[in-house]
Image (cartoon, rainbow, N blue to C red; front, side):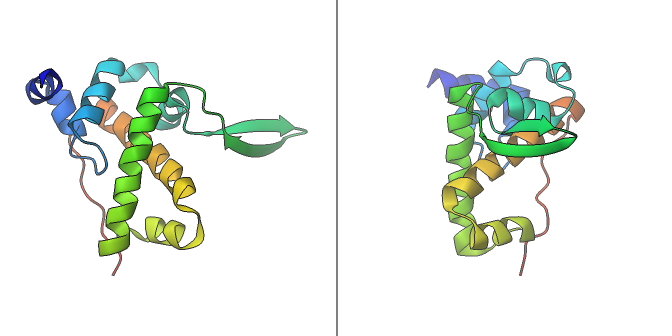
Length: 141
C-alpha cells in the first residue's frame, strides 16, 4: 500500500502510468530509479542501461546486432517485459498500431515483448526528458 500511496503523490509516476503497459508499480520503480533523465543522451541509452537492446559487434565498419545482453537493471527489465506482454495480449484482441500488428504476426511473442519493452523504455525517457503525458497513436483497422 505504501507504493500506491507514493505513486499517487508523485507527479512523475502518474505521468508514466499513462503509457500502455505501465501500471503503478512499474511507474513508481521507473520514477524512483531514473531521477535525472538528462544523464542519458537518448532513449536508446536508457534502454541499454535497463538491458533491452541487442549486443553490438562491429568489424571492418560492418555492424552486427546480436541477442539481448541482459546486462542492466533486472527488475526494471522484468517489469517492462511483463507490461509489454499485457500490451500484446490486448493488441491480439482489439487491434493496435501497424508496427505491433506486423510484429505479432511474424515473430514469437517473447521477441515481440522485448521489442515492445524497448520501445516503452524509449517513450519513458522522452516523457521524463521533455515532460508531458503519453498520447496514443492511431490504431490499425
